[in-house]
Length: 211
Image 1 (cartoon, rainbow, N blue to C red):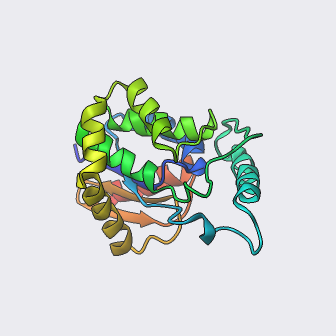
Image 2 (image 1 turned 90 degrees about the horizontal axis):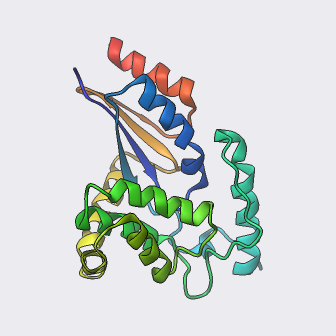
């Protein structure tokens, strides 16, 4: 049987990917052979890229919380962020979260995807400031990944090198909006550069199987 692989281009902070979790669960039921992969795409290089003129980071966090909450209808998962402090003057990027997933892959590949989900939930469900390294380490610990190995890869440049490979793929496929998807069945593949629902996934997969 040909392999079915869905690669999601995302960032651990993305509410849209969190809201897609029920869709992925349904796909697992329909296609038991499915494999999910994740490409870190660094949504926020610097928070100033998303801030309005004269908007403070505190004000942006409040507006970001409303954006998160508006995404609840996509998957039906509740999002409530009355006190979001994801970014501040010392933590202006989602880079730490992206590096963390790559470090987790290097430290413990079998637990890396669980770590990614836990990190996403810490950010969106628990509303923790996961741009802070100490918060990331709490997720490392709760996932059961060796902290010393994780810290080594996070700091020694190896995670950064792996992240650069992900970002190179983002550029190669001309991914400009997130999430995006690379859906592969056997030797056939299609890139989808927008959010899609369960029915769209199934339609694309079935078309790939028929071609």
